[in-house]
Image 1 (tube, rainbow, N blue to C red):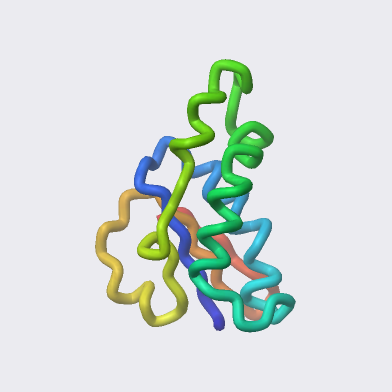
Image 2 (cartoon, helix red, strand yellow):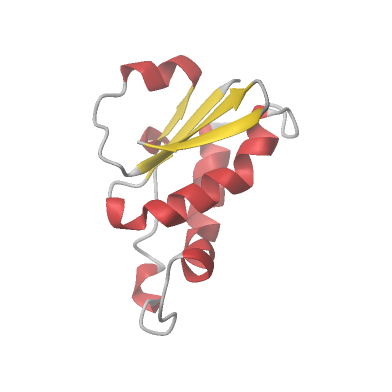
Length: 109
């Protein structure tokens, strides 16, 4: 796999999505996790997105507790390689990770 795109349909959380993709992309794209599935990525996001939100984006963790249940994605929000080429609803709500010649590039789309 050379490309991974994960989105959360509310672009107010783009920093959280980017933090998540940056955390998993090296393992997904560089072979650390063999046979990783969309279901695996969804599970990881749904379990850890609130923590990433609290660490990277939130200004008041106590006030944001109600977001725990909100920060969830489905398999339809995860794209691998050529699937990304057919996705057209680019709204700045997702992060693309691409294997480049000198590492992994991250792009908000």
